Image (cartoon, rainbow, N blue to C red; front, top):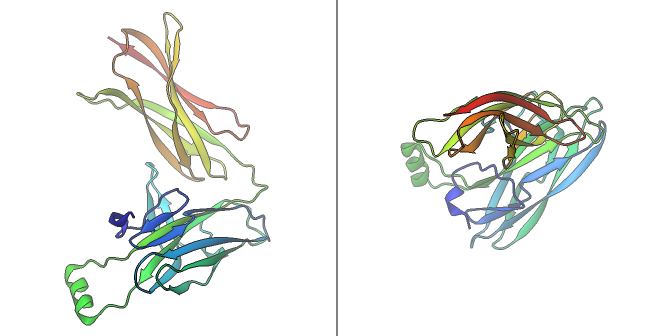
Length: 265
């Protein structure tokens, strides 16, 4: 069991996750309800501890930065929030040791809900503290709350607005680096969450020989941009090259690209 995660609200894309002594699955929940439609999905919860435990499920939102990091914010604070569309049944549950339960997550999309939305469901242990434990928590300023977070995404089936751009390829190599480092900005200008592959292609301007390098997989949300870091071997032959960063996000959309000149002396 991954006990060292128990102080954090963990955002992991996997089929299930342990936090201290309980398990939740899935930790990624994708809805595709059209406007006016209701969809229901199930959350599986297991108490692996040796004592009865109460669990609270609550909704929250999150922001993203250009490195793809997620920061929790109160429910309803994001313009892309779907927290108000979700009903959890039940939202508070008690389980005996080794007991499991199923919670319903009911997504009710309003008639004008044409855009992609998202939020999080936090599943946490609720623990009644003794007076001594409460005083100790206040003194240290730290309250340990075992918690697992489920990412929730909603985009209507008829939402085909996939669009992204790639720009600003530049080198970021520092003295002593083992590789030549680059970064490029991928911007989601559409209305769907995009799973993209970004890779470098290097063409020798004298021989026209071209090499392609393994792609980096990234997720970019609508109204957001993601800084993608890429690498080349440091042992390139001397010469002048055309270096391109290629964006491929599928959905029958054309690949995008941006390039720069690279000279190896």
